[in-house]
Length: 433
Ligand SMILES: [Zn+2]
Figure 1 (spheres, rainbow, N blue to C red):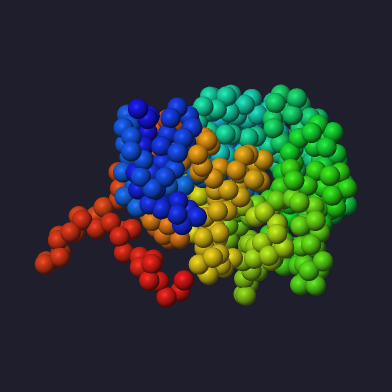
Figure 2 (figure 1 turned 60 degrees about the vertical axis):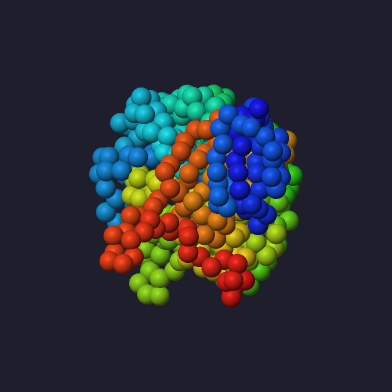
């Protein structure tokens, strides 16, 4: 007797419909038809079954704090940082934990089961660090939560940031963070990159920098990061997040830079929801997009994984823990509209995010962990298009969440019907394929 049998699943690589057998916390078989009984049977009916979503860039200490103590009037990154500075002294461990746990509940309902969260260490009390370490422990059975020691106000610009960062790492924070473009000078920014790379190398830790989140074409810390990662041989565990300034770099410089990034082996994590709104704020028209050079990075073989960054906080007032919404925005904001590129955005918020976080490849396979999501869509592009409902979310063989399919009851004259938004796309005969 199996524990769970998922019938008629389409897989993200196009195979299907296939049955998926789960015993304990493992997938034991994936085959055309599995002749067996199970305690729980889920009929996917030709819908997409995929690995859980991954968000490699988030701020769980700030999430769901929208409006506290006030709203961001200008919509800029800098007012967001100032506003967070007003909220920081008012934080309590209980309030941070409560907001974070509420966010984790939402994440589970959206099939988002691995999150890397930055946590600001510039508060000398390390209130948020203490709270999120406790949250990491509480959610460990169902969410892989990594914490990044993030000096929001600058490693050198904020008086105790370096000591606080080392203390946070001693307390068990997983990843070294930084924000070179926010230091006082370009030279300080470059120095912070070197120092943070050395801390990561010495302690055998991963490194994830907010890097060149700016419209300044001369903000070039990603170059130093690539060089230092190569020098120290740590590239595979280094992430450069945002890298929006690359949008504004001179084209010739970009052709020199991108091969250096590829050579280092580091990962790039753009955050399309937030950066399409934050960037270009000092432009009149034409107004720049806030996205880095995704197609060129991909073409050079760099692992690119999209992050969400924010949900209802001083920087971004929307968001819903939905990585399909992130992929959907990436399609538009980059833009990348070929079928191959749209399919790739789905991979970017699953497999590529896991690689950026240093997690095992989550591809569904016999012998692998029974971590999967059943979507109300038939294939990855339809999932992105519809921001598809997560019908079932399973982690280590346990069903964590179920959502009823979205079906409209239409009472149109002569056309009464139950309308499934996923029942229309002419996938097989699509002239674009
Ligand atoms: Zn961020």
